[in-house]
Length: 171
Image (cartoon, rainbow, N blue to C red):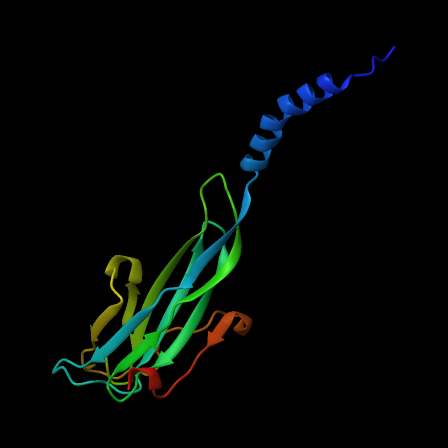
């Protein structure tokens, strides 16, 4: 009924099946990637006269697409020179090929200080610079409720709080 295969026929079947197995593995590709999950940037916050603004709140929002992952917020405060520095953060992740592509990270900045107009949504991909100068304008009417950058999601578990009064690395 069943014919037993000799060694040559077994090798031939394995050799013929190998490209198919390889293609299936590649199509369902999961592979490790050393991904930048926070881009490095130095922000210099000044007023309209070019004077440094101390203790301005600078929030970096990190979002990931196409997979919907809750955003991550990193909050820093400017030093006496109006500077704050976000350091690059990289980690190994497992990338899976989706029908609509691979994971892409985007970073946006929001800068606020009481008494100044809030600057929302500076897209760091569009800026394409490691150093950004932000000029805040004096606010005519101070509205305390609407002059703060959002620095957390509804659920505090996704809030990454990194606070520094003075950046010692910039001194």
